[in-house]
Amino acid sequence: MLELPTAAILGAGSMGRAVLSGLLSPDVTVNGGIRTTNRSVQKAAALAGLSDVTALATESTPEANVRAVTGAGLVVIAVKPYMVSDLLREIRDALEPDVVVVSVAAGVLLESFERSLPASTALVRAMPNTPASIGLGVTGLTQGGSTTNEQFALIRRLFQSLGDVIEVPESMIDVVSSISGSGPAYIYYLVEQLTAAAIAKGFTAEQAAILVNGTLTGAAALLTSSGLDPRELRRQVTSPKGTTERAIAVLEAANLSELFDRATNAAIARSRELSLGS
Image 1 (cartoon, rainbow, N blue to C red):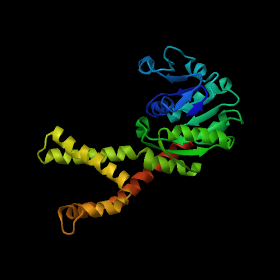
Image 2 (image 1 turned 120 degrees about the horizontal axis):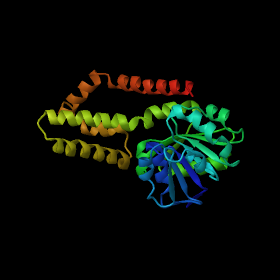
Image 3 (image 1 turned 30 degrees about the vertical axis):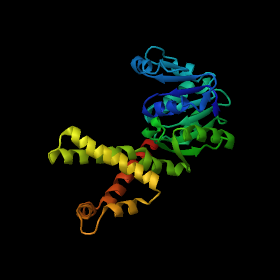
Image 4 (image 1 turned 90 degrees about the horizontal axis):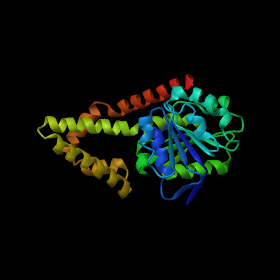
């Protein structure tokens, strides 16, 4: 069992809700409950029925963020990157002296938090991905300078309840974002394109979904359970002079490896642009 102090999640969007799912998991106890904030009443209402969750909306309660962090020992910053600076100024004086602040805001450096918060504030930067909401996520974690090893271990255990965790220096967080953070979108995009190809070849949308989604989940499960390298698994499907070999040759001719390199580099560049604006 993991015991955590009163927690606040500021900005309970996709990533905020993923962290919330970890806080609500059976093996995690949050002493004092969980507070969440959103801008709209409608979004807050969607969380209001959850056990031990107090959902607030700045639309109806302008001081919602301050109320959420007052007395909280764990504060998760999950708002859009451009909103972080204003939010930190808003909550600074309401934070508890021993609070741990965890940022899941893409592109916002720990340095920005250090400039805005008291020098002793324990900081952790996290980069989870959306499968964390079902306990199958991957999260990169960076420990801030004022964060003790004990505090960092606590946050690591929290994110382990959401899936796999790797510890990286902050210089690698943007790279984590480009691989696992954005990675689900790359996979979904490939699924979209393969589905469209199936439909163009005469299958109904329902049939295409069965073919493509089933292939994706089966291949992912085999990759996880077999312990084999993906190259070896691909080799097992690719018979010499067979149909798969011919299809793979087309993908290789398109220089897919270079394309992924360019795509992930573009994601890294955008993260660094965001950090310059923080």
